[in-house]
Image (tube, rainbow, N blue to C red; front, side, top):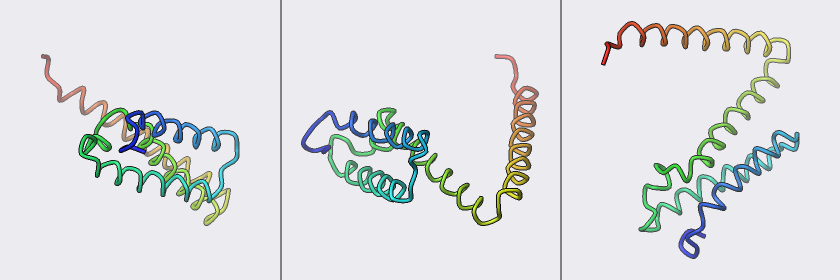
Amino acid sequence: MVAAWGGYAFIINIIPIYVVMLIVLGKYSYRLYTAYSAFYVLGTLLAMQIPFVGFQAVTSSEHLASHAVFVFLQGYVFTEWVKTTIGQEKFKNLAKLVLTLVAGACVVFALYVTITVRDM
C-alpha cells in the first residue's frame, strides 16, 4: 500500500477511526483486537522498509491516529482482562484507587512544576 500509493496516510488513519467506532458502538471482539494489532505492527514495520517513509512511520503526526488507537486498544483489552479476572466489584474498587492515585500524581506534578519553573 505504501509503495504503490502515496495516499496511504488516508488508509492508515481511516482504519483506526473505524476500530474506535466499533468499540464505541459495542461491537468489540477479540477478532477485532487481533486484526488491528496485526495490521498495526506489520503495517508500521513494512512501511518503514520503504525508503521515502523510513522512520516517519513512527515519528510523523500523519500516523498519530494509528499509534494512539493501538495504545488505547492495548489498555482497553488489559482493563477488560483485569475486570474478568478479579470480578466486577473488585474492579470498581481498583479503578477508584488507580484514578485517585493518578489524579494525586497529576496534582503533585503540577505543584512541582509550578514551584520549580522560574520566570522566563
